[in-house]
Image 1 (cartoon, rainbow, N blue to C red):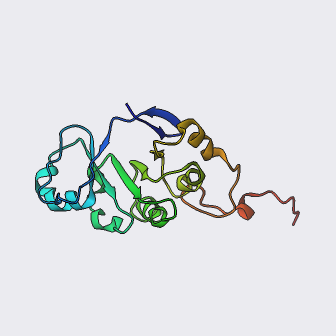
Image 2: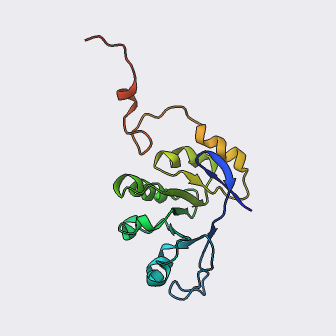
Image 3: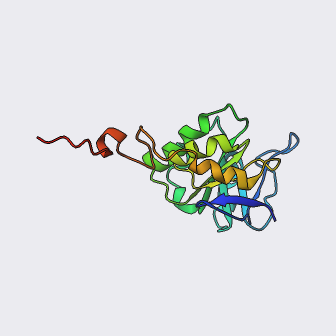
Amino acid sequence: MPEIIKDRQIVSDNWSVLRLTEDQSAEQVIVPPGLVLVPLAVWLAQRATLITRHDLGVWIGSAERAETIKDELHLFQLIAVDFPKFSDGRGYSIAYTLRSKLGYQGELRAIGDVLRDQLFYMQRVGFNSFAPRPDRSIGDALKGLTDFSNSYQTSVDQPLPLFRRADRGVVA
C-alpha cells in the first residue's frame, strides 16, 4: 500500500486517485468503489449520482478554482490539489483559498509532482497531507516540513508576522 505524509507522520494511503485518460470523458467515466479522489470535472459532471457516496474526495487541478465547490466543501473529508509539475505554483493559491477564504477544515492533500523542497511552504498555506513523488524517499520528504524553524510572513499556519511575535525588550 502506498504511503503519504499526513499530519507530520508517514501513514498508509487508503485513497486512490482517478485520473482521466485521453479517451475518457468526465461524464462517462465510471468511478470505482472505495475511497477515491475524483477530478473536479468528474464531480461536476456526475454530481447527482456521486453525491450519495461518502467515500469520495475531489482533486482540483492547478487551472481550476476552489470556489466552484464552495457550497459543497462539507461533503468532502479529503480535497487534494494537483501539482502537474514542480514549477507550477498555482496550487498554493488554491490551498490558501480553501483554508482562509472558504473555511475548509478537512484533510487537504498535495498530489502530483510534490517534492521535499515544497513541503514547508505547502504546510504554510494549509496542506496537512502530502503524496510525494513515488521516485523519491518519503522519509526524506518528511524532513522537508522542518527545514525552517521560523517564518517572517503571515499565512494560514501563522496569522502574525514575526515582528509582532518577537519580544524586542522595548520598555515604554
